[in-house]
Image: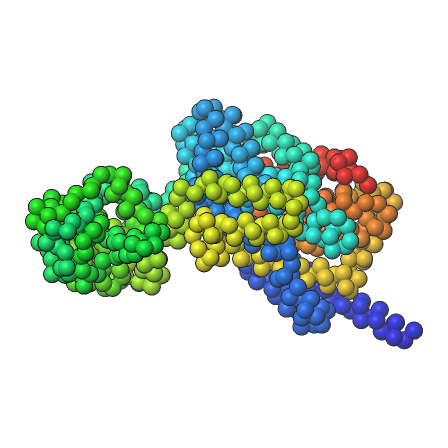
Length: 622
């Protein structure tokens, strides 16, 4: 009896400690001063250091299948976005709007909703944001009329499938951990379709009238151009020449430095394609970035920048130039073109490209200088650089990335890693689409465990080049989301272990139990929905899903309607700009205020609450 009393007391103290840590964490989540993943890690450490959970239990979240699956889904989504498949499909669907504002409004919501059912909500909105802004401006309509619907549709679409949003995965996994069958891939789809349809209907009728009509806003237009756009803008292609060195050429055996092609002719040797191995066809051609001591060989295909006409007669060269062939060699997947600006405190000022030995030091070629609207190509290497000059540089993406990271003398325009990734994945949209369909097939037919289907698809995205490299795959993972989920899962363990889950279940039953399971389900829906307006919807699902299952068991009914209520309500985050990353993403672009989200989001929340609380028990009976 004494031992039992001590255990109860210890459990009670542990439960109080767990609730204190949970409340403090929630306050920090709502306050928003610190990143959500840092707050979650802090709560995890407190739970472990106070002995509420063991170190093994504290770290268990990082090996959880849901966490691994979400990380893998970021890689799969990256392959879809990198290859241009997402924006291509989005553009095609949005064209169906035919310059009709109401039709475009509906198509935008359906498009982003369908994408969000299978890919990252944030990634989907980020890709379609500039497309939607452009189409709105073409219609002479404020983009603010479309961007809140864009964000809301991504949250509504996320609940359509198992992988659409983390709360769906967390809730399904919680069912499996408690001995119940996890949710199938399309098991959320019936209630998801109801929420999606109601949401679109509301936004097309009432919501559209509540949206602001902001004329002045940050459209999010980037000053960064793709390599192909830059090449066209600066007329690079007109100065590209592809030559081949025949056996009769006098250039064979000579070093690049002795020929003085730049000083004498204003020519830049960009790259050399050389036959390396005649015995192995797959590897017989290699591409060389020329150095000063590079020696030309018979059969070399050389890409030149500048007026190459004088070289053909002097060195007996074969001209292979045509625009498509030059483009193919110039914008090869591992090579790129970008702009760099001379930084205010740069040591490059008043020095020439030649004095800086730019090519030898950074392994990139400066093709031209853009200065006050003037394009300097001829003898660019002899021009003294000025503050504000933009250098048009060409080289391997890895070298350009290194320049962006290491040099304080220049500022590289745009995200080089994104440009490099898009270039590497060019033309692979069908492959990415095939991998995506393959993953969905595996998950729908349950041929393998869902986490294996996702990891296999992520692996295929990397080895097929839809994602440029393993390093790029890691870069595309939203580690804040992954760590947040992994660090919050032990909170559910602590609540279960200390009796907190039972306590909260009993409390809710004590208040609403006499009114039947419908009232209890409504209580779970409203509590989860309100909390998810201020803290991560994933964290909310982690807390409430196990409580929902325990409550259902105590009521003697099926846990599925309660778990579905938690998963769906956690994703209905419309009332504040901090409720969802997608809301935050469109806030500045649309020129919205906090009040705009409240004005549109709260009525939508109320309508969805009434409809979904009524429909959930019909689709997932008690």
